Image: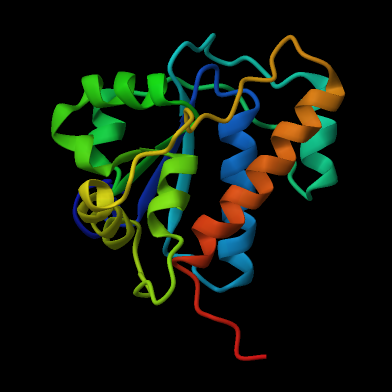
Length: 192
């Protein structure tokens, strides 16, 4: 199936450096939340900027993901392409440097490219409209960019590669919180 048209408006592309830890875990977290909310039309994919194609996540990442209910056993790293960026309704990166690199791949997509933390900062406001698609969320966040004070610190989710398992788990906990907030913007509010 083509990623143009309607399906393209439903694709969120999550990008990190190697597509081994942060982006596949964030993708798994978002997919799980969306599936539970019955939002199967919203697609989440992941890719990396500096990928060894076919690489598998480290064992520690698989354990940390499993603790969150995410199975990374079959995950294989894949590289981001200009086409994938162009087709995505929303692109989330883990760092500001990655956001700039993705924007260079597809300059026309720049208004739809955010760091994960930046998107949360821009869209976590009282009385924010409930968005239904990734494209609507990207548009609303982009419109708010010039209206909201910039972050005082880099809006990066750090790379845990080469760090301790404890550090990795801190990063995963940050991803859990950020992804929960992103998913809340496109999933129906609970009536409980």
